[in-house]
Length: 344
Ligand code: Q9C
Ligand code: ZN
Image 1 (cartoon, rainbow, N blue to C red):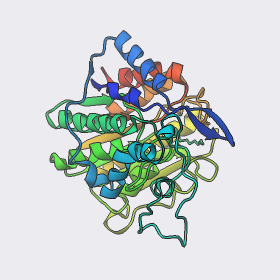
Image 2 (tube, protein in one colour):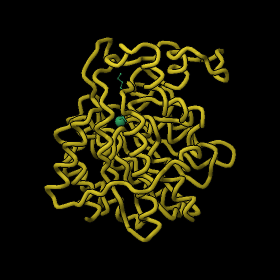
Image 3 (cartoon, rainbow, N blue to C red):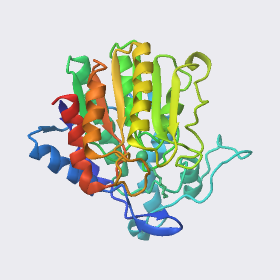
């Protein structure tokens, strides 16, 4: 297993988020990557820096005006007031139904709302650098698969699967899984499958590929009627136009047990097999872990090995993108177990 790790991840380090109306320390923080790095190094993995530039791929999965905003957002925030260096911007107004999102406001906070799905994705000075390095890792993994590598693991943060065509959200800024899938397509894969096993529905990835038949999106997640991201991820979302039939959501009630989860995984694997993809991208959220502080599935550490084994049996070139997982101290072990189960 080729493992990519980007040191730039540490540059994305917002301090707090809003949780149940209060400011709390960010669940998605650099310690997560530290635990993953320590665990993988202890098990003898070699961590590689991503070497492929994703710049040409990014406009294929994200709107150019969103990329321009994200790249320059912190500088714009500082330009408003030098004292902003020590504070985090939060959006406060969003263009929901009946409001216009085609006219980009001049006001910074209004633009932050335009390009955000929630108030839960705080920016910090190095957000762009960290997110870009993660996308570079995704592009690097795709290139490695194209060159014949069986599997690659991107130990990246911030995560990506909530980031849509033109918005950030859910701690995500650039959609690494979408970048990997697009890079695989560009590299000659006729069909690609994305399997999202994060606790939260991968609304961004679904949206990016919703009208496409070449990239199948399959997701197992907490039922959005009660779980974030709430407004997407229902079972009746099957794709549109040419993409009709190429989106499969398998929502499970919050609190669902391990048996139900692996039944859903079996259904997901069946559908992926039918697609006959040339490569698989896995949005590997580890927040399905029983000890996760913000999620409600019940997987135990050995279950992550079982997941890795099942994915290995698909027999596909596979690129793993780390997504969520907020029991930071257990994140490294759980990631390593997926790799062990797949085969090192
Ligand atoms: N700020 C991923 O697992 N939580 N994202 C809302 C309020 C949102 C999770 C807390 C959870 C997003 C990649
Ligand atoms: Zn998640």
